[in-house]
Amino acid sequence: MITVKLLGGAKRSFSSDKISIEKSSMTVSDLLVFLQDLVSKNMPAFDAKNVLVAINGIDSSALQGAETSLRDGDVVSIIPVVHGGGKISINFRISNHNVELARLKKTGTDPIKLLENLRIRFPDVIVQGIRLQYVLSTNHAKRVIEISLAASKSNTLLSNKIETDILMRFACTRQISEAINKIGLQENRDSMLIMIGKKPLIKKLLIEISHITESILPFPNNTNFIKKEFNITKKGLDCIMSKTPLEDLIVERSAVLLH
Image (cartoon, rainbow, N blue to C red; front, side, top):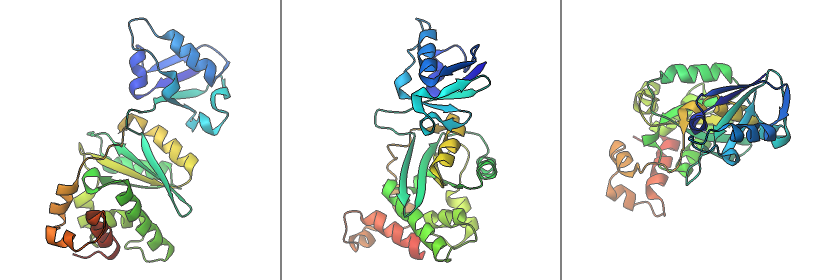
């Protein structure tokens, strides 16, 4: 028997979020056709072209794609890919590091336990979460994370852990407790998860948390909030001769931690 778990919008096409298929073998392609044929006429269509398929936690694209063979006992997760201007996550490289950003849904789930559990389950992935209000753009996030990675390489971290250094850089403070209280994950608040590590591990982590993630783009316009939060005046911005003065000023504070 093959067990299919339907996550997010994928389960809208079916009467259940789990389907058991009494077959000992089939391919991913066969499975998607089977699921399309299974949808009742009064249910929304199942969009097989825009889904991520994971077999026992491994993305099928890392195996043989649509031709990946499924066997008796396999657990297959079907995760819809968000389009229309949105992305499930943002990924980029900094030197030889893979970095992924994902947006967490507002939830009453204990965010501290979430981080602790992810770090236990994925010890080779650097995982940190911050409130989304403190992020201006993808480029802002990339530049701050780059500062922390450079500090790690030169043994000049603000803390003994790089994930704590990242938190402090975004908060522009040398005080760990202040950084946690200021920008750490909180219940029912927009937040962003930062993951640094090998691509297959990050993909596996993303699959595991897919039920609590949503489209990360577009970022909310946090310009006014950040100006107020960090006491940035028009006079201060006018001194920065660039196309992105607020981002440049915040990144500078992240690097040297001016108060």
